[in-house]
Image 1 (cartoon, rainbow, N blue to C red):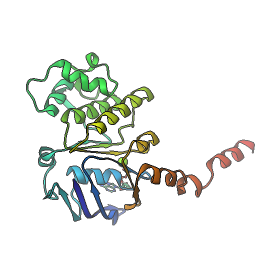
Image 2: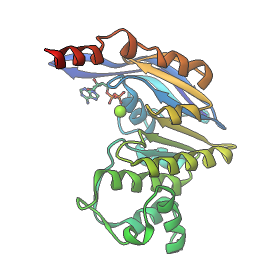
Image 3: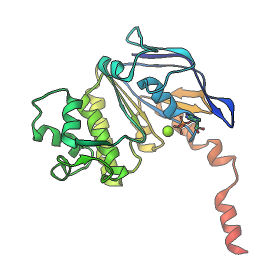
Image 4: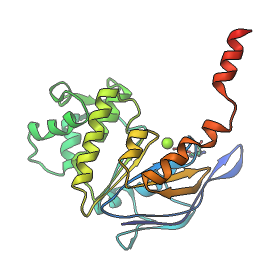
Length: 251
Ligand SMILES: Nc1ncnc2c1ncn2[C@@H]1O[C@H](COP(=O)(O)OP(=O)(O)O)[C@@H](O)[C@H]1O
Ligand SMILES: [Mg+2]
């Protein structure tokens, strides 16, 4: 179980500190798939980076299974069981895809067949990728999928995926949803956190957390939250783009 207690994070904007996250408190229980959603710029990736330890909050505490991990490094948190897939993954020159999966799996004895299983799960034809270097020759979508494969290989107690749908074609996305569903079926003592805008991912959530303007705006089951999202400001209260477009086309 992960507890975020009164998390605040500020970053400078035009020389003035702006609250990116403002007093966010949230418990992520084991045995559940939690989806964090909300408008772009709302603070979701910042929250994910705070969970993984990439950045530290200005105030507040992060407790993982009863231990205060607020000041722990990314590596220590990974060792404790937090696996993280970035929205924009990092390239590692000189490392092959196979090595990355072997490191994630934490074993010297990983067979190519085992490694390929994880690549196939994200819709990559394993034989084409397994010996590729994780460098600039990979497209953003390929890199993203390889990173998701490494998080699957880690099989952490808590797996966090930041917008796994980004850069993924429809076929692979369908595949990925099946992978998340399978993970969920075997979830028991672990937890999955997915940051996503995709309705199909929202639908498989045990709990949805809505982060908006740096604040926790709502949380509840998929049945409670999805109808709310369908009628959010961005859809109903802002200017009607379709009307403007029609108007523009006429004149
Ligand atoms: N290091 C930073 N410096 C300045 N602004 C930042 C920094 N990190 C994030 N932000 C801003 O914080 C807001 C939230 O960003 P982010 O967490 O990436 O949102 P989301 O993932 O919900 O789209 C955005 O307005 C973004 O520009
Ligand atoms: Mg983001």
